[in-house]
Length: 260
Ligand SMILES: Nc1ncnc2c1ncn2[C@@H]1O[C@H](COP(=O)(O)OP(=O)(O)OP(=O)(O)O)[C@@H](O)[C@H]1O
Image (cartoon, rainbow, N blue to C red):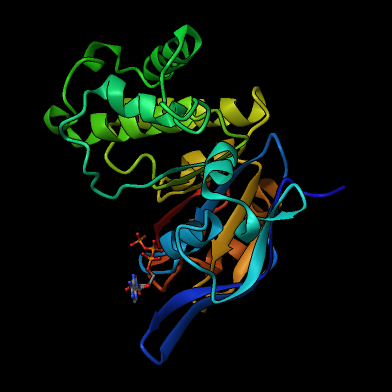
């Protein structure tokens, strides 16, 4: 069976002039419909770099990405935005829009040339805003939101985009404790109930181990280990990501702890 979303010998990094820095290479990763995947790694491991390449927001150094067996590089921007929704923590230039207007941008890949929303589009936008719990802010300007509220609005925009694949870079970064839990559960339900493929990077280790189907782990020596979450947790893979002489992975608690 063809995976919904797969990388083939992908290498990612940066090119500055004649100098190329390869961060991660030889990546053969895949995700099926209905799966939630967490990408874990220490600060600077290359998570954002990989997620940008996965969504064609930046060009891979080598290899290619397939969606449903088609090379993503050969798919138009408009069609790509009907396939993949991307949520980053980057500051957005959308302060002059209301939350509803921002989330409505998620409908653009589906609306006609003039981008007019019909009643169905408006209902989808309202539903996306409600599902991240910011209906009370629907008419507020994005510039007036807190970091966490803005993050929720960005997730709502991706939900309104109605794509089979959603990629999120640290979606819970600015969120309070309750919102982190609710957001992770929302993402799990998008995968498990709406059969989307959802990939997220996170430092929220224990929660992602509870909810995800697959882990992509970037080790300290920049290998990427991929496998079913339960098997990864019960292997030594977790020790290769964060553990140091002072920090160890506790399989029972599903989290890193100080070494006693
Ligand atoms: N435009 C760039 N040019 C060159 N190197 C870069 C560029 N952007 C990021 N890097 C470097 O690439 C490495 C990986 O960065 P990246 O943002 O992908 O890490 P990350 O795993 O997302 O980290 P964090 O958990 O801190 O968000 C870092 O060493 C970073 O300094």
